[in-house]
Length: 250
Image 1 (spheres, rainbow, N blue to C red):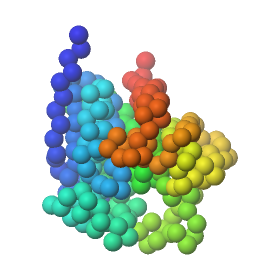
Image 2: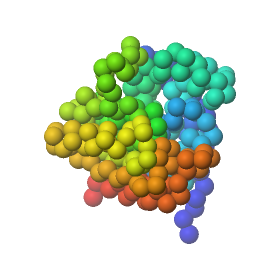
Image 3: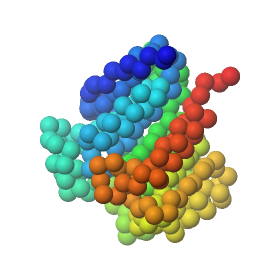
């Protein structure tokens, strides 16, 4: 029988420009080598649901880390208060986000149990951030779970988020899995099709799946938008995708 013990704790890592931020780390009690996954939390923040997802990856054999992208705005506040502060400030700046995710990536790769391969997965706003991270950082695989505003009109761009993520597609560095709801408005099915067209045009490796009778946040078990059929199938696809792209070389 495989021993399923794990350790999960909040630690501090070096993020953008050397800033110290909180991050939730979960790992199996195994000598490895183990692949890693950076979990990007949704806009509601560094909350219990995001930490549960991080532990789920650890329970399935991954070194998993969820950095708190809202740490600077409200380091000692609740996830709800920190999220409100981030929204009031215009959102997490993309450059800072990339720096924080790079810190998480480097931390996982430096762990003694690490195989060296690391993926990234994000939900909601984190889906968009996972898309950007896959274009800017050397991840081995990326999963975008209903990331809104990957497609953005010029008037939607801001000083904090000055470039539409879709415009970074030529620089995508790794295979991408996208999981979406047919009833979602952000991203809408039309926007998902637009992203897929761009990926095809640049010869990128990707898989997209859209679920009927599901909208935004269908993975969120603690929210009314949860859709069990879509979530169960989505998890199967995540496990298969990461197993394919993060497995040690033969």
